Length: 200
Image 1 (cartoon, one colour):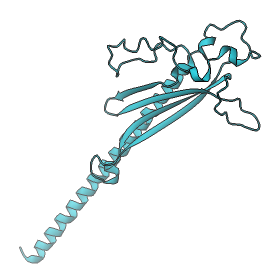
Image 2 (cartoon, one colour; image 1 turned 90 degrees about the horizontal axis):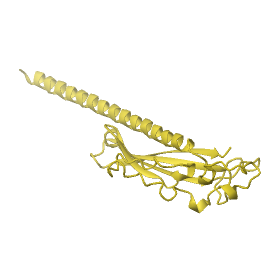
Image 3 (tube, helix red, strand yellow; image 1 turned 180 degrees about the vertical axis):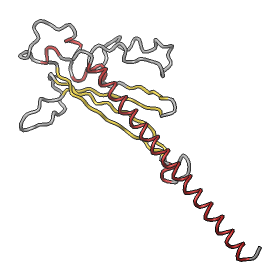
Image 4 (cartoon, one colour; image 1 turned 90 degrees about the vertical axis):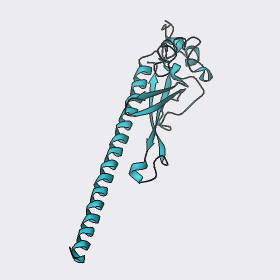
């Protein structure tokens, strides 16, 4: 084998190696993008499931029994919890350890009976082969939209409107996509979904 053939063989091996590395890198990048997309879909699903749970509950602890004197002309301050008392009532979390204290299976919200019990709600959950998620919620009163202020805004006054914000955080490893050293580029992705519930 001559020098020319040896040089051609070395060049062919270098080109083959570069092609194999490029294909592997593209494959790993596609896998990372797919995993990130899957994690995002699960995060949105978790947020929506907690919103649906909250919407299935009564508007307020004071309206659970549906007092006969309650109507549109009734001031909300009579039948709504104060803004600084929103959250689970005493005993609403009594069942949180019914699954043996394992936080993965604890149903912290199983005894909630009204919408604002989700205020300051926090739970961690893991979905096998996907990611670990941290779910948090806040509930607060908002103003009635008007022509001058078309977007409901936060208020400390009781109203017939409450807003829930559900945030789902998950960690995302961007290492493969950016080519950085393993474990050096882990970010947090947050999904936030809100919904406004009215009493009527």
